[in-house]
Image 1 (cartoon, one colour):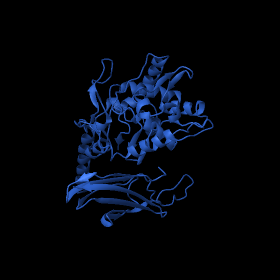
Image 2 (image 1 turned 135 degrees about the vertical axis):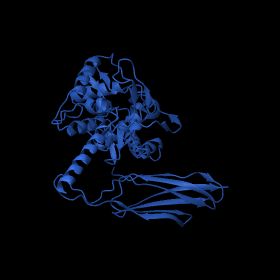
Image 3 (image 1 turned 90 degrees about the vertical axis):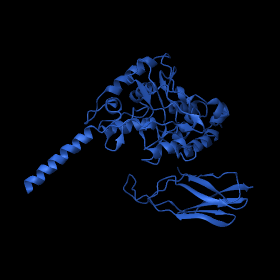
Length: 108
Length: 285
């Protein structure tokens, strides 16, 4: 799939200091740079190489991605939410594009 | 010494081949629930069916793969459903229409539609599957170019349309037109041994289903989950792509997609899985 499109799943509400589960999925071909096309030319590498998640500006989770990771990378992780706020997600592509998405959560 | 080693190796070889010959395991008993809706994945077969029970390929997969399909968020096939929805609403062709111009909201107009394909098409004098129907709409109604076989748009749109029937039982109408004739032709193809390996569809999916072909647990070859997300390729696989792949693996000449041979086969194998829920997009290895 050529156009990267993120999907995120974050609960809309939580109680203070609750540990919530966050799921993210993004459509991306994750071309490894190891394959050749029909004419024998190397297909250039094009992967998402970095993923970060921040909550109200503070980093919650981040990681580097390498070429062995399969297409459509999926992440699931936990976060403790002390207050209402916004989760921001960013995926950085080899070509410099940044795909991002946001999710609000209300803490009662 | 050398002799002993050889004897040992031979004995080990014998054990290995015995183990290989008997590598059978039951499909996993489990329930597939997607977004709170239970799917029919294991059901009694009709009286005239070669099997006693119909089992979805889902039961033959690992715990992790089954879990992936059960969660509509984690299921990577859902990305293609979303892409298909964009295509559904996108205007294309000289008539300035999209799918939605005529068919409006797919969740209403396409509900259950994918479960009843392939369908007899009187004008064409042959059964049509979703892909052929989409192409006819594109040419006749939208005045757009028909999709080439396995164009990413074709696969995404077919996935989106079929997904509107998620959970509905597969049911095709063999009474229409010459469908019965096509069913018989498909049945002949199903049992026809071809290729250097001299294998028929039935060799793996009927005679040896439940056994292992290398690391692959052979299913009954039901098609209720197509187009299917394959972890192997990290993308969607259409039914005719799968047919061709299977036939290629028997080292036979494989028929063209949507050719009469493969359309007949689609009619027949769809009939074999009648009563199972549409699982599109299913997840397989």
